[in-house]
Length: 297
Image 1 (cartoon, rainbow, N blue to C red):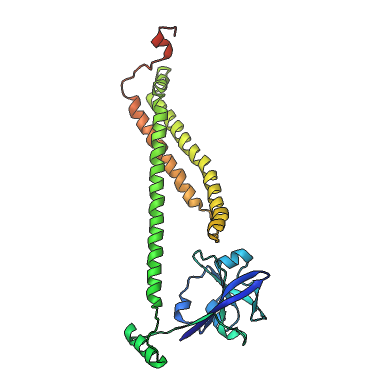
Image 2: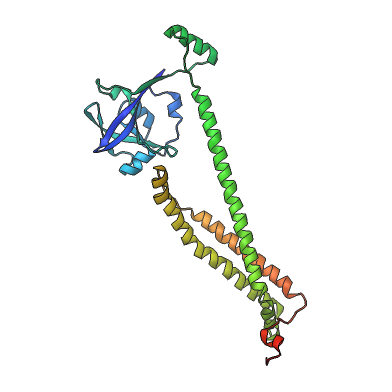
């Protein structure tokens, strides 16, 4: 059985956080995914050797694993090291996870709940048993394992949707870049045919088209990367904290940049291939304003 209590505690002047007091440490807790942790964090937590904090509190207070956090609980100050930092999935409030054995005697919890491992019993048997023991008509019971399964399913679907949107965005951007490059070079196809008139072989003309098309697409990708990084920084460090009260660590992924450069290279080669086929078609003299008006050429 696990009992936990929640109230508020101060980590510094004007800084209030949610305090979650837990005892003992059960299997449901030890399955948490920690962002950063010391060696055997749950064993040390069970012995009352430290606390755990959520991501938002760690970012605001610039705390790392191993550093000491001063807590004022029921007018008593506790100085404990940070054993681990756990993800809060965007919850803006700061959280501190504390072993209930460290609570001062004067501490008054805001609420209390019990976590029970039913074993082989079904939920109806557990509810009826609690009603009989506590002599109450109704008991509110939550299946934490089921809630966790549903949460994992929601997050998996969210990440899948995010990846699908990323792929769709890349496909649309690639198509736009391909069409733009092809139209750009198609308007100048007559002048590229003059390269053969000036003595270049077909293979040399095709090589020149490859160099021009690849230079265009890779140049656009290289110029777009700094703008994308800057927009990401504005979203992570400016918009999110102001709009939602929470922020995420900004990470860069050079492998993704390599994928973008590779995609740009593929688009450039595709444009060159399309232009090579277009150069093989019969030529038409481009109309000019001077020729249409009968002027000198």
